[in-house]
Amino acid sequence: MTAEPNNRIGILGGTFNPIHTGHLILAQSALETFDLDRIFFIPSAKPPHKKPSVLADAEHRMAMLDTAIEDDMRFEMSDIEIKRGGPSYSIDTVRELKKIYPSVEFHFIIGADSLLELHLWKDINDLLNLCTFVTFGRPGVNIAQIQKKDLFLDPPWPEKLLENIVTNRLIDISSSDIRHRIAECMSIRYLVPRAVEMYIAEHNLYVR
Image (cartoon, rainbow, N blue to C red; front, side, top):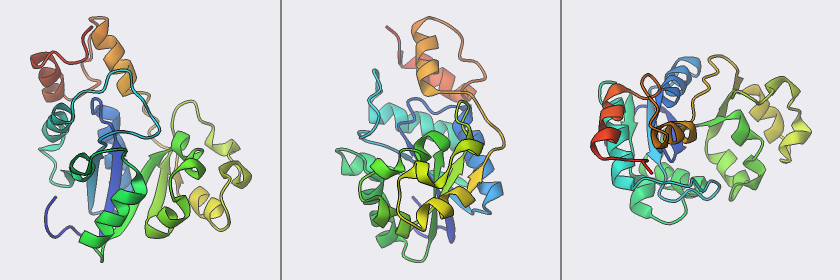
């Protein structure tokens, strides 16, 4: 990461296994909707809540991420979780980022499916105090039906979280589907940036 980021930074974490067009559209939407200055893409070392059947080495996931965002100066990759190793808990990452950038206002970007699981995250109350969560709708999750009681969090967090929900640009692209298509020798054209498609082919990733 650069030494001096601007004051409103979005955090977009995940395995990025691989990064795809949906991730990039989500980041663009977050920038515009919440008036953010930059987005930090943070690939996880070991996701505590997801266990993908095929997890490419961190080196490959970071390289694909780098090539996907290299033309947009507002996007930046952080290897903070890869360097730390072990399970990638968001609270540890945000605490570390706050130490490095104490004046930055961080916005944690999640999908609606993750919103319903936040109560299970490590030290979630501390995390909610350290950054602002912004939620984007996901295909298959009916945002309109989510109520405060469904979040299983103490006040005022359910109300605050439901205020920061965006339902535009529902992109039905998933890394798991991309991996499946590769394994079945199907095209992933347009689902990932061309440079990422070429990297996957060059390194023979996700094939059976």
